Length: 297
Length: 245
Image 1: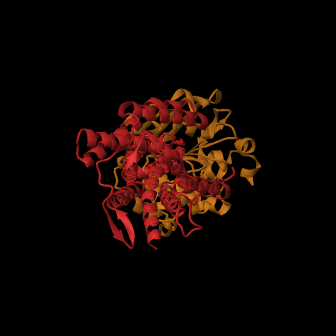
Image 2: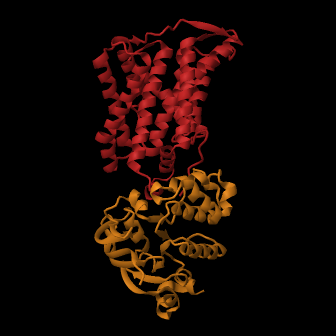
Image 3: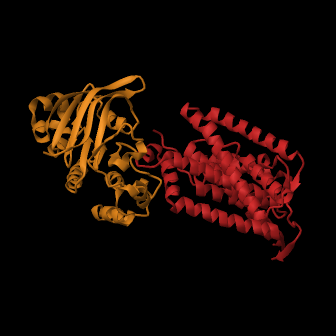
């Protein structure tokens, strides 16, 4: 029981991080039809800039996190204006966009190494402090991540659901040609999309860095395929699906290591579970949990 | 003498290198219903798509009267057209299927309409009571007739001066077609000018103040709607058997 509670808790923590990161990818896809392969490296960027601002120049941690989110937004918008907008105008296809996004990922990662070095880093946070809950050892840092992530998720979900710009984003994703003739400013929708993706990608990186303890410049990349699995599980382009897909995947990955399940799998193989989930979804329900089968036209 | 609200002059254009419109002239007087009819491929829908930047305009002008001033339509970005009083209901995919009915109305609203969101939404629900009980349902679950009503309501949410309708009766069951045209008359009586393109030519012309017959991307005939609807030459040549039957 204690082990189950422990794994469930770990799964929820991991899932909240997957969920936030997956949401950004899903939103970008729904609005721009672009699978952002550089999304993982925005997580790394968030973790490293927060580390630099908080540990090296001693800004308060919260300020460091907010500035990192801002940087995530700024870089996302620079890429939009210099790259994505131009590619859209030339009518670049999925493959071209995929290759460019992969290139962006490489450049980001190498730039991070260049600036911060290749060593692993660590936030100045007490990772050891724990308390007992139903027999499980709950780390305070992890609990804090779960709480902050839940607040962030609630905020984004409500923003997309209720705000005018959120509704416009969904309208544009639903039917771009109708959206642009209904008075929706497409450029504003795209900027909002990159803003959410950049800010919350960086935030997810800070959360992941906190949970992992130590992190390297490969952190985002290591996580990216699991996040992508969450995106596809929750139906690509469905923001709420991405959140739920993230939680489901996080919990499944953690529970897969449970002794009671035929001894469980070694925890280093957790990403394999993500792949297995991805393959199963693609084989049996390629449209994801919430997707409707694509209409044949 | 009523003023001209929307004026399209010598419009030429098409898609890519394919030219569809070869100099079209349309005048839409204020508070009128104007219908453009003509055979398939005459370029009827292309006129509307040209206004909304979907089709290419190679030459010609379009102006709309807004607060007593003439505004250049082609110099206005498509997403700003609702702000100068032009509403548009495309022929297909004219609602946001994945959003609720209420949200479809929200998205159609613009602050420039001069009315509050709640006030306009309330008036839409009064006008289309069928939609009230389904406010929270996804628009994709509506029937064909209800979809068309929602599409009209969405466009009316911007409180347009002129509503552009691309084949509003397409795909509707015959009983619903009558309802639709009755509804268009009601919308017009509430002060909204209508410019529509219709396959169901005779039915549309009967309710129209004025009609244009388009052929090969050019004006062919024009006249008061009721007269065009019964003009034997036009009925024979352009409307085909379907309209006569």
